[in-house]
Amino acid sequence: MFALVDCNNFYASCERVFNPNLQGQPVAILSNNDGCVISMSDEAKGLKLPFGAPIFKWEGFCKSNNIKVLSSNYPLYGDMSSRVMSILKQFTPDVEVYSIDEAFLEFRGFDKYNFDNYGIQIRQRILKWTGIPTCVGIAPTKALSKVANKIARKFPKETKGVYVIDSEEKRIKALKWITLEDVWGIGRGLQKRLKLKGCKTAFDFTQLSDDWVRKSFSITEWKLKKDLEGIPTLKLDEIKTKRAIATTRSFEYTYSDIDNIKERISTFATSCAEKLRKQESSCHMIIVMLSSDRHKKQLQQHRASKVVKLSYPTDSSLTICKHAVEAVSSIFKKGIKYKRAGVIVTGLVPTYNHQLHIFEHENPKHKPLMTAIDGINKKYKDYKIKLGNQDLERTWKMRQERLSPRYTTNIKEIITVK
Image (tube, rainbow, N blue to C red; front, side, top):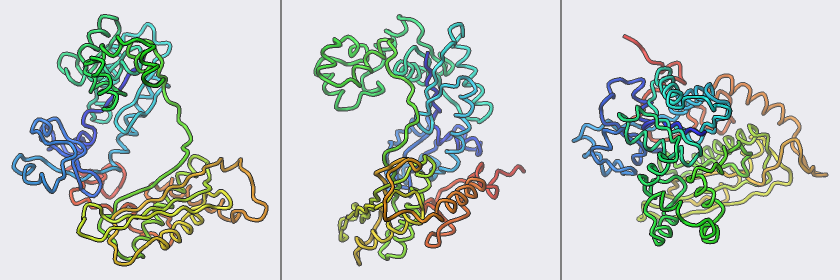
């Protein structure tokens, strides 16, 4: 059996844990730089505030409806997500963290368990230990557990937040209830093609012949169909080494001076290097991107990128930062107001198993230096050691005018009880 555990309105729920005044109130969470709505509470959804709504257009609507609008507090959300996932690992060792607010669990050797009760235990422990409400869907396959989770979320009173598909009758009833638009893995393109075949629900999809699905689509769609039929074909994903690592961000404000842009590129390059070392990889290639604000069409536009090929693989922040800064200096144009930049490292190879170059190699002092820096930064969480050309005060410069405190990750912002 598989379970999908999904946190309800996760970002808004995290805010409510530490600010009880938000309970029962409509809450909306904004994207980076306070751009648009990316998460909201059920109360805000009931007021018909749309997902993706640009806040500058909907500011008046939010004020008139008393919707509390907050900036994204990613340190808080990341820490709360880590707590939830660690609790899930107490119920089974087989856990796939699918996103920041949901995870798949596989139950092997749980044949005699009462999954209704087990799902309630999972839900109650997470709520008691973190304050985060969840819904649990349990079924014989991953795809069906997604369906079961949607039923638990749609009918919280009837299901108590837990629904188990453990019979053929329940499976067919669930598939006839859920529409194609709500089926995990069926995107808009696939929806259009299936609707031409007369499919309106997930059950209709399962009634198509295997041969036709294999010929018309790919193995992925065929596996999804078998999963919905109750035949396990989709397994838990294993953690894989990334083939490329990217750090891209929009700036807090537009920058027209090269010094600010160099500082941002240095920070992005350092972030990529840290991720490389974490997965014990080194890169052969660096891609640096720089672009102006495409939404301000009255301004002069410029978008450019540059590829830097290295003669030897590296995971050194010093080396990657140096080449990235040189690259952005070469594509920068005076008079342009830049809004976004990014660094991508690719051509990855294992750090301790790659082809050496006869004449060029990494400075041997870099390896122990990077190890020492990573160790100190890991111990003290908030990065204490940075390169000299980085901003020593802020790592990610974003417009966050409605930011709540980082209650769990910064001792200076810990909750106070009066």
